[in-house]
Length: 204
Ligand SMILES: [Zn+2]
Image (cartoon, rainbow, N blue to C red; front, top):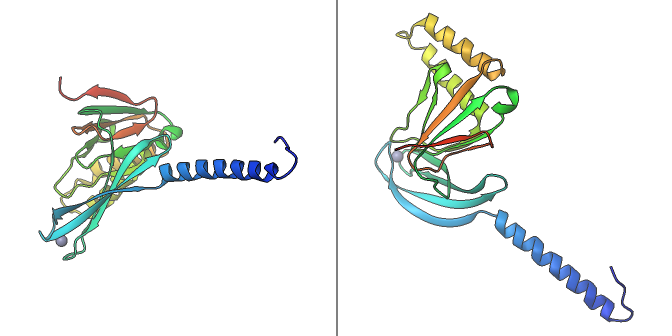
């Protein structure tokens, strides 16, 4: 800093503080969620009127993400959704998972997108009350594990086939089984946050 004799010194310091203060405030504004709108919707469980609020978040590395949430006043059903603010057009995303590091890659799955993992016979298709989420590849596998645990209790499920699938899933979670995560995304608002993400047009 250059020191100027006399009272101009104080003015100079104030100017610097003001300048940095403004900068800090501007970057804070960019990071803070921005309220977008409130949407009236019908609860997919009980049919009552509910409101969903949407906020825009500017997330470093990922970009502009819209988070939505709402609770039904009747049955307390909670709605949550996560999607990118900017659509890339209908797309199919593919991501080859080869090791433990790849399991940490961030995934944004929009509510209208389906997830497939051919090697693990996993297929998650969107339903009426389907919700978008932000997670990691590992997080997707853990969701599958939860569903598998639930299926185990079903007496109609072939126990041998179930165990084979569960073993494969465990191997995948340990980074010992290579697999491909495929997201079919008609709205184009899902992402796999990696430069290894392969993107194909959905309709051609
Ligand atoms: Zn409800």
